[in-house]
Image (cartoon, rainbow, N blue to C red):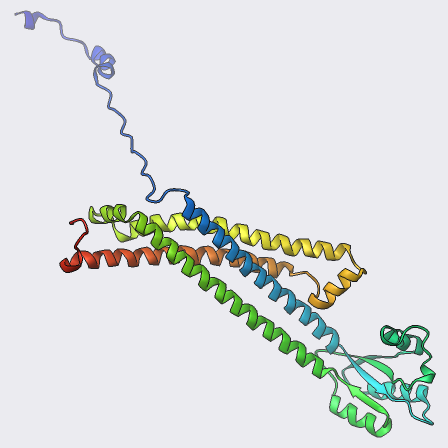
Length: 343
């Protein structure tokens, strides 16, 4: 009777009291997984320094090759833009008339733009470093020069011009600078080959260093790798963890080496631009050309940094995958599994 006579709660009361009556569910928190490898250790820092050195050497080589190629291309363009007619002095020869005639004959060929006769003062300035100042050209049998500017894209017929000058002005000799151009092209190609060889050696040394570093990290954490692998962790998961670790190291190392190389070239270029017309700058320019690698050179340095980071990451991944395959092979062979924890 008491249960029957007890007043029932109304619908409004049920709605008001329902939220208070339901128990609150505890929020599920996922514990963050720690990395297999420690974020930083002595081996990782040493590997970072090695990668930074390799990156610096690779970027330095690439920048030097780019600088030499640019300088050789500039020299080749300057040499190919002009040809020279030399007229040797001879008894009874009217030098001024011979110079004028040689210039006019050369300008009759298609592909020539302009002709300039070097006067006595300009010739004396050319010989001043060897014969000193105040030189009287009339006392020495010094050849006189005619400089002909040509069209690089549509050069004239050098053989025909040489034959015509030989017939009309026997004392004239045409120099089209082909020998110097061929030497510059050969020098540029040799420099590129040497630079490519140095880059290959640097990348090979870096790959071997990463392989040894990865195997050292695996050896120190082999028990962890075995436990993870045999409780169900796939090889790709373990390799990805190592890959992330070495990617961070390689990015830091390659960035440090590449930035240092870029700063070195920028500093050398700034020094050269501020010390123009000085003996030091002239000697450096004569030996190495201008310390300017241009936008393509800096872009090449950036590409080298990225390639080094990718090579390091892929090398670490392949090394881990191969090591895990070796563990599986040892586990599958009972005769070779002595001393290893049972699976």
